[in-house]
Each structure stands twice: as C-alpha cells, then as structure tokens.
Image 1 (tube, rainbow, N blue to C red):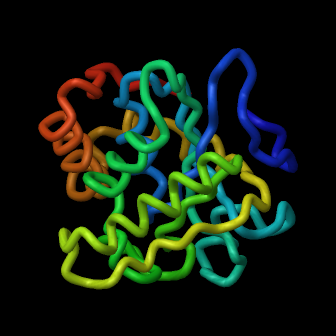
Image 2: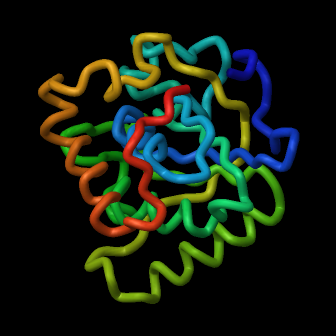
Length: 196
C-alpha cells in the first residue's frame, strides 16, 4: 500500500495504477480482484484531504472524498480501456448522480481519476463514446476528477468480500457484480480472489 499521503502514480516494473470511484468500494474492489492482470485492488478514499480520510468522516458525505479503489495492473495482460469496460459493465452505473444501488451521497459518486495523460485521454474518449452509444437511458454523469491523492481505507475494509462472503450487503449487492464479470468477461475472469 502507498503511504497515506502519497499521490498515486504509475508503478515500477511495467505495472500501472488506476483509480475508480463507483459507489461502495467493497464491490468495486471485489470485481477488480477477480480480473486477470490485476495484481492489487485497494479500497480507499480520493478527492479530499489526508485529514478527513477516515470512514466515519467520509460517510457523512461532506469531505470531498469518494469511496474508491486503486487498481494495480499489468498492461501486458489487461489494458486501461478494458478496465473501464469492466467498471461500467458490471461495477458502476454511470447515470446515477451521487449514488449507486442503496448507497446515497457524494462519497458514492461515480468518477475516474486518470493518473497520467494517456489514461486521461482514454477516459475522456470512453465517456464520450458511452454517452453517444445509447446503451444507457439517462445521461452519463460520471466525471473525470483530478488526482489529489489516494488514501487507503481502514484494514477491515480491505479484501472485504474475501473475508466476509456471507455478509448480507455482499450477498445482495456485490456477489452479483462478480457473477456478472464471470459471465460477461470469461476470458478476463480469474476465479481466485487476488488479495491486496
């Protein structure tokens, strides 16, 4: 994990990092933890400051933070545009403003946080294409946000679905996302949950 105050950048040894905000981080983390080429998915907070990057404060919805997941991946196995496709296909609804499923508030907004110019270009093109595709009935409200730093969430949030598979929220909202990943992207699905 990064030090809490560190800004997210590309990793060493050919790996890349990306940050996705799409509602409760448990489900987004679970989805990416089952994607081939993803070496790490860490739940955390982005958009606010280090001083208020704590679950009990972020949950109030006025910190600027969004529950987010930092994904480290091998671009030789999976590309950023493929991660975007997975994110919008099974992870987050890009038409719901400040909520996903049962969770409401700015901390549950849908956002992309590009970490380099190439990601920014791909993300902008993808959102434009998504808006023109007609796949979604409502307007696309997912935004591209600046990288203000990523702050890992408390340890009990990490690998939450792996450690709590029968937790009611997981069973109702997040297990179906992983099942959809397996069904829609069988070539990119990894059965084992990649912890960390």
